[in-house]
Image (cartoon, rainbow, N blue to C red):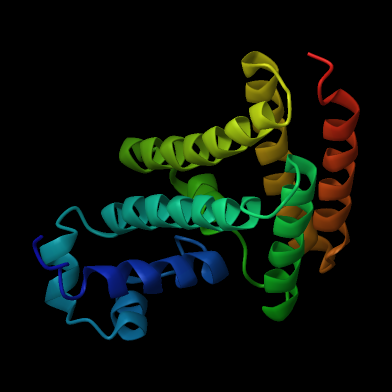
Amino acid sequence: MPARPKHRDTIVDASIALFRKNGYAATGLNDIVEASRAPKGSLYHYFPRGKASIAEAAVLEAGERVVQTLTEIAADAPDTGTLLQRHAGLLAGWLEQSGFRDGCPVTTVLLELAPQERAVAAAGRRAYAMRIDCLRERLMADGHDAAEAERLAVLCTSAVQGSLIQARVERSRHPVLTTATELARLLAATSGRS
């Protein structure tokens, strides 16, 4: 197996953190260099299309991390509602710990770039698709048929993402936790009904 590129991962990690906190436009290449401690030449070596290609990689990596977290929580969550509530607890804690400055790096970047940067928009679609697939599989295990599981997975993903924005605006955990609680109630009420 070939060795992982030396500075690529640190550049992506630093970019995720900066985009989460500052957004895409307010994060400069020099900020990424400083935060990653990678040589500036590494940015251009690994990301020859510039900052937009860094954003593409950051969106994909952040999406994979969300799915990894969901998968880890799902290992001992009895149902999707519990999974969502536990994930919401983590998200609310991370938001609060940052003083409600940090948002979702996927959403933050996509709100700024999706219309004009097709590669970034494609990365965002893939990141959300991975999350929806993860939730759909879990919902099917809970007894929902495939079509309903797909619709509910989209609803859950959209609702949680919206609650993160609302939590930042309100500087409160409440929107995230309330959204997860209400989604859990909805899922419990519809489980096995299909």
